[in-house]
Image (cartoon, rainbow, N blue to C red; front, side, top):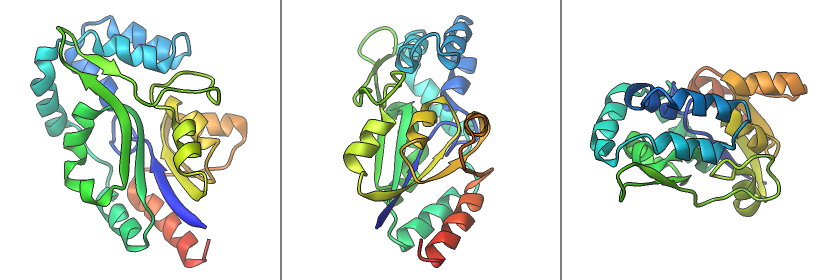
Length: 219
């Protein structure tokens, strides 16, 4: 069976959640109430993301991008992990509820090693940043998350053996549609609560070793 490695971005490929970090540094205080409502399920994820970015002036675009490039770190081992996946011909796909305008500069140096990136689109044609949701959730999800990871997985990768790496609330539904889960942060807590199996990771070297073992055993 063909294999694919699917990965979240914020807090998974990056060490910190980029949206939360941007809000902490650029948004007025009311972002925190919106974020808490999002995390606690009071509002849907796409609504929360839209409301938070609506707090930021479009004129801050370049300043935010430069700040992200200077302050957001990629987890160790990411480059080597992509090299290995390319060597064994396992495509690497990013499934993210994040926004293109800060993801693209962070992934620029890796773009030739990444098969595809699914994310939301930032819009800067008004006074405040807006968000366009391209991959809306369907009836397989309990919440609208902007980028519907289960829908994309079922539509584009149904016939693959699916690895998945994630860390948070937008990864819960996606994990249910994949065969092997790598988890960190709050995704681990959820999977523990549900009694679901996963492999814990702190960096991409951890994931690399686990995938290597499976591939070497013909899994």
